[in-house]
Picture 1 (cartoon, helix red, strand yellow):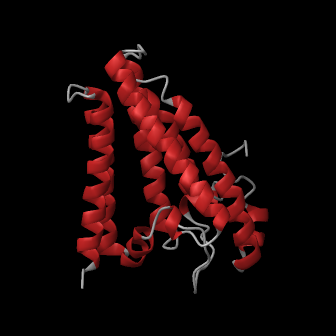
Picture 2: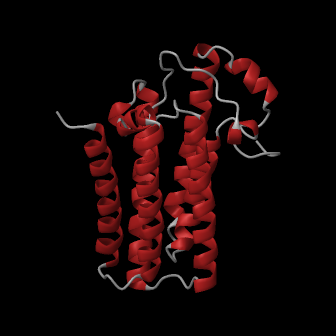
Length: 225
């Protein structure tokens, strides 16, 4: 039987290799420093999360291994997940093609600032995992699940989505491509639809969530929505 550490590290390695493959194949070159920097940040974040939660919260890692459209129980969520995955694929392919064809002229300074925003988004996602062991990759209410209200959950009701939105927004500029926003913006919209659908489920099935939702006013962006 495959152990959880083996599964987790395989998943991490596969994610990094697939992302690198998409970026460098679509760019058709390894001379793409923006992609190397982006991939490095992504790899460090994934490896850190895997190592940290193998030590501190294996149940969270186990839940997050079951990901993707096929893992969703509700047909609507399967559709949303498939659309989001397709939009992200388009984002990375467009970024690589942009680098290859030199469509955009994004400066190195803007790229580095975008990488900084990416890091902030990833840190928010990590903080979400630390404060909510039930932050799985699928929309469901697990047995024994309780309402998470500490850490970033005191600011917004869906901090993992906030971190993801920041990462999605930063990705095109971090990869030096303005055209990649043609994939990133629809991915963000799909994520927002997923959020609303998930909140409907949580209010209906998770005890205490309705009261928490009344107390923490904003879903995604403090002071905005």
